[in-house]
Length: 104
Image (cartoon, rainbow, N blue to C red; front, side, top):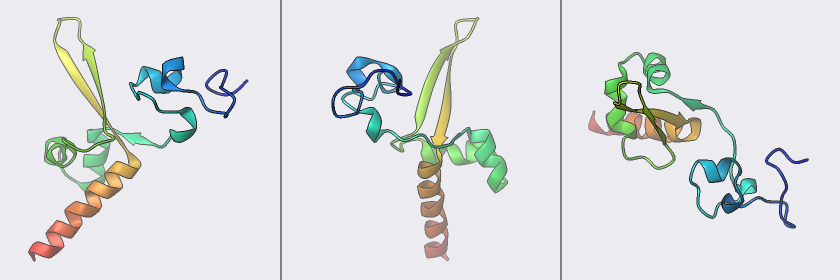
């Protein structure tokens, strides 16, 4: 049995059939087009470059590919957890370095 359940004839699983893609809201995506890569929290990435999470939040705020998961706390407050894929982080960080170099 494939990792994500039964697949159509072409070897893929559409988001409308359920599975991970359906749960994360990737409409019309097929499982063979989704790749699994490491995702990092703001805390981890901030420690990696020696800053605070609030310092890198503006860099990734409007980036596509960043996962935002809303959780309702016991007191009714809503907290949004952010997970940044490694490929998105590499692109954003490279752009920040390039901006710093060009301003010198």
